[in-house]
Length: 193
Image (tube, rainbow, N blue to C red):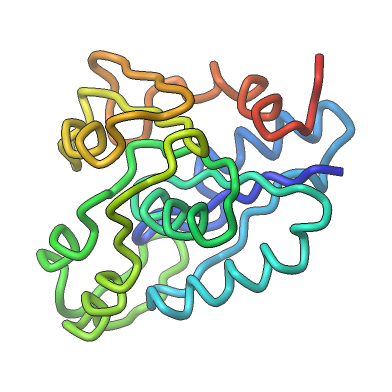
């Protein structure tokens, strides 16, 4: 059975709204193990190692990535490394620059984990930047009303993609994401109807 690996964003968790929507949709169809959503380390290099371990264990089944915000940044790196079809939802394409604003003590509001974000973590993020994405691997989903990220940066970083969902309004969480749950499972080749 094909697998969809959901990659959550900065200070989010494995139980994010989008992950839950996708798991519920798969479950309704009797495919409750088709969507994997791990809790990731707040340390970028550690999060990537976690994801690589999952990908390498599941790759024989067929795996598609979906990443939101910082998860989208991670997903693009992994898409290129493993040549995987990938959905990017309001991706934080400039993560090494954007997260500098958050240097210092952090508390994840979902997991209550406390940690300190440092310059070393920004260097870890810089190692993950991709400059020439393979257009045919991606479905880019952006909403112009994203209050956290400038949607134009995602369009600049991914000027061509196999598929583009570009909506006016919306927000960083991608308003009414559930509209796409079946289509995402189809893209991941989990369902064919």
